[in-house]
Image (cartoon, rainbow, N blue to C red; front, side, top):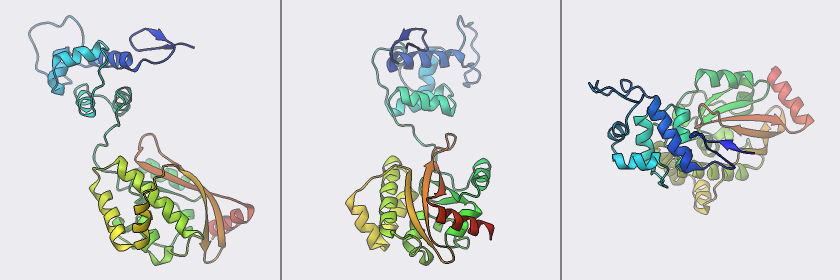
Length: 285
């Protein structure tokens, strides 16, 4: 099977260098100079879009570098150059991510993570009922949960938003200490996931602050953090104790919305018939 690249050639596999060159050319040629904030020039343009020297000026790089990129001469631009080109060419989020992928660089996150659920995701969490569901950001702050999830967890609505964090609640909140049958395994997984998030976002001061606070105030967290485990999977099982329904076994899935990849949608499913009946009874109350 052959695949077409943006420069019209056909090859058995994608040549990232040629694809990058073609992508930069097409986005440069599609951009109206007025959209880029460039002044009108008396000299007419023989071709549409921006000139290479204009892209170089907007991106703060040399014209020769832009020429070599567009000629697929084996360059691998740094993350700084990729970001500068994305701004200069006014790429939308999907195009920006594509450019980073072609350059084999990690996309930078614009700003910090969301501190509130967007309306579409908030509605989705509610619509997943009767399955318990919640939405978290990369720091594991709980942004939204449906009623079914709320009845499984102790009430924390009176806590300030900064304390509605899944890791902090599991470590410190009195009502959470007896929720999980295998609490150490849950905490261990949480620490490993938090380490992966911290490595991916070293610029997130609030995330680093959360980890520093947990290390200072919880010996269990400090011990597990020192072990250095890293985990980034989003599927598993756990058993939870409920004061009225007893032990409930669930499978969980963690999903990342494409439009909000820094957020995590967590959905619980009953692991057996007894747990399904218990969840149904709690949901019906």
